Length: 91
Image (tube, rainbow, N blue to C red; front, side):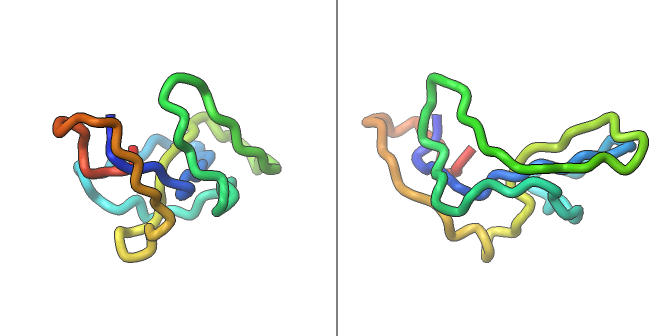
């Protein structure tokens, strides 16, 4: 569990797989972007966000996450669940 919720959730569709070192910034642009006011706070169920993507050719992978660096990831809300073991992140 984490202490924060975020609206910075995006998707990138790619023909190739992507590898980045832990805590590295993913330097690709997402094709689908969550609405900034759609904070993902549900910890028990799937949460949807919608958009349109037109495949170019050969997309085989989907990369999900926050494609912004920490200075751009200000869309977070604090939600404390009563435990000191929760992580200080929004995932």
